[in-house]
Length: 267
Ligand code: ADP
Image (cartoon, rainbow, N blue to C red; front, side):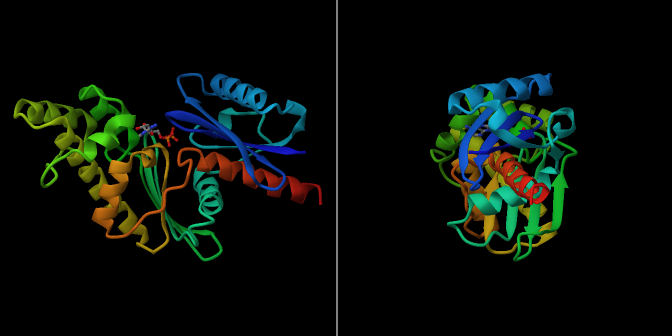
């Protein structure tokens, strides 16, 4: 069996997916990007191949993507994360039906991508100028509230009444706003819910820039946060599909691109 590797070197996390020649996802691994992208990407790949019992020589094509994609020199090809995300999203959402709009929230940016019926990217909008509406914002909030990002969802659903208004868009100001809210005796749950709605409002504005088309899909690490998903669905007024492994779909898309490129080169 031949194998295909997709490496997504993001600002916050390195995601690696391995696909077989039938385009099935056979394994995946996530590690922190840290300061040495290349080294950590290589170590993560070695560990993943070992876990999957795959020899490096059986990997016939590697595609890198993401923020640090050019640092991974061993890749046979590197592609933009928008393209990889679009390919991975369509494959990961097969049972959901046609994907027309992708929302991706990463560690340091957020994107809305519009697709045509064939899955080609027709338009995209991106916020990469500040932490507002990104995973970083959630990381700062969780740290201040002394909870893990993986606990945000549970807190969200314990909130009571109308979501609190959290107006700061800058992560630094949000931190002082949160201190103020805690000082006014608001619960951690109410603050988390307010933060999710403030991010959701920004994401909806971003999606509106490319046009809201039914068949809405959400991925990236923050899509693991059910509370945020619920806030975005409420603000958008549409149901959103979340794939089984939302953080790795861009790397899966890169691996799938590898299958096509390899088959094309060896036709
Ligand atoms: P990037 O591609 O920019 O590195 P990711 O798509 O990997 O970004 O997303 C990273 C973000 O995902 C983190 O900043 C964090 O806020 C969020 N995240 C990671 N794991 C979880 C989790 N288990 N639950 C909720 N959020 C998470």
